[in-house]
Length: 316
Image (cartoon, rainbow, N blue to C red):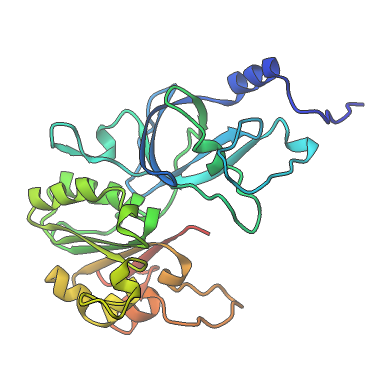
């Protein structure tokens, strides 16, 4: 009868574990700031074809070091030789080094937009290890790419609006680049809400993309900058959550676009409070989410086809 090994692996054993568990390489890491980065991962085999908006699973062994400072983690013996895995939507750079459109279908790697979680209700397992990685390090990347948060039923002349919080922007970047590569004729607006402007990891690429394509627009809003928090400032605007900028008319004015369910597809990704999804038996929402705000305007939660549909991706 086999007994549980109750000691951490040795350095030699770690090399064996890495060789057996990992099937991809971190080829580039772009740090936005100390808690936000882009990770470009190249699989040992060819990149698997997938639809923009889908996700795959990344994994690292519990034997890998964690970035500091981060919440203390006490591993059970059964975890010493296991791999922790989490699902991440696939993003894309949107434009290449020659300022040409770079949809996911043209890339030889997967791009991920990740926030470092240092503390949580349970000690975070993957991101403290991921942020310890350097270019050339090995990682697990699932060969299976899945997800239903995709550009289904979007016609070339339809308007498409993406609403995201933080790294929820990732699948929208992939979908925006895909639409533009198809020669999409309708308007495309990608709106993102973050705490601070420094959390806009794609702002440079988004600005260039907006200048390059007349039917594409990127809007960003913040909740923790001085103008969001200090009523005494001349430029005070308050916290600009996406629900509020839509309800107030700020979004439509900034986009120059009417939220018309007859011609518009809506995509939501990010914070549950922004989305406003209520699972069966869940307590009532303390304030409306985007689902509630948009349904009042005639949009429908996904399950139907065509314009007027709200699709949403959940990160919880």
